[in-house]
Image 1 (spheres, rainbow, N blue to C red):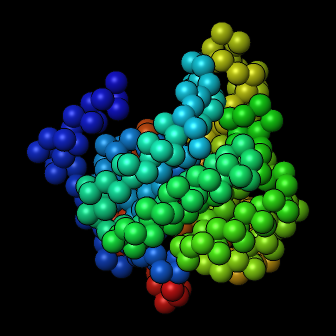
Image 2: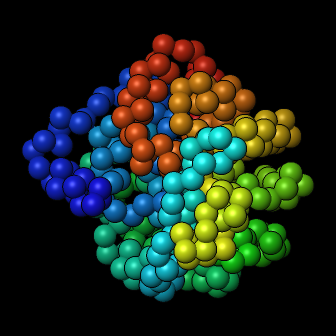
Length: 326
């Protein structure tokens, strides 16, 4: 219902009532990508109206929901629930990466309304095998390379918290290295690797080591954390799977610690995603070394927090070091 209402709103003249300007002193760069705000929409939506609304409220960039080779309906419903985790509000989802497939995606991702904002647009790629990742990438990249829009980037989703085992490509870092080398040989676009909170510190550092040898690469430390339905007080008839991906405030402390870990050991640009939903949290991860901040749950529950955070950031000096680095 919410998506339908938002679709009607974003296709009416009233949409301009919800448009907020971004202060001109909070921008940051990721190589040749120019983000007017360090806050970006994490990869979980491909609905144009939702992505457009977040552009209107002042998001610095967006990332499409993960694209797979073949169409998929995802998991059975019910597959998303509001829950209480350690006394805090959170969302549990087991969407299972529903997608219309790459053949459909290549026909609409260059949407003129989204491109008109001239803000970076990420394309998240997933797969059940390295060959799947490569096929999806090649299908999309042929269109990206011929596009006049030069602010596209790729995000390689190597964690699948909505599958039965919670992970996929993150289990085989040799395959990840091969994939990144292959993509870099075919494209000069920025490559972001999206990791899972369920990866331990050693695994995160090994991924960073791989990325250190890949030009124009970055790491996104954050995705939903896999938990069982029993741990959040749900019964079997409340959820179609035995567990799912937890998102929201309970993830923040882990996200912050991972940002610090990477920043202390590597000089790789960091995108912090997971549990970030207010100004103080944004400020904390930036001061700890994050270049960009990914949001998901907060964009659903209260997207108007974005212009408020942008305004507060404009009165701080925490982004100075970013603006001088391309």
